[in-house]
Image 1: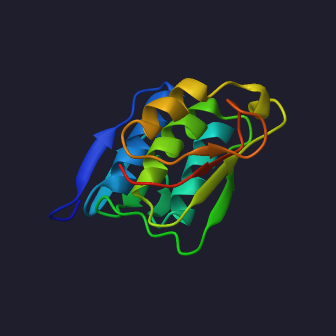
Image 2: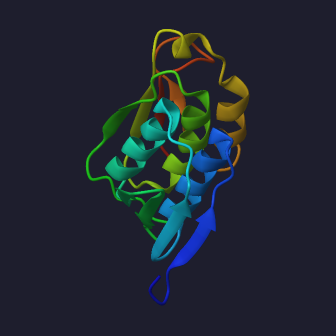
Length: 147
């Protein structure tokens, strides 16, 4: 590792890999996650974090993440398909409040049946301006505001 890089080993549960990815994407500098759990869900998180401005490269047995120093860029308003990953949806909805432009999160038909009302209420109470784009309490949502 180079000076200023950080290294963590993510334990097997994919939810830990999601969290390590998001924390690394929000950090300063380069972070390394050794032995991450690769799954469709964690790849959804990687795809969304790249679109939000984090650099993510895959190497044998590790991921290297170049963080955004707490400020996602992402450019213009974008839509992210979280497929059927509830963890990706919930964690990235909160993280998207660090993005200067609106972000839409959607998902599979099954994802759109999963309630997110408590999450949206909590985030709106701390500066979010999140609204439902179809059925109240369920994805898809438009995320705006600040954390």
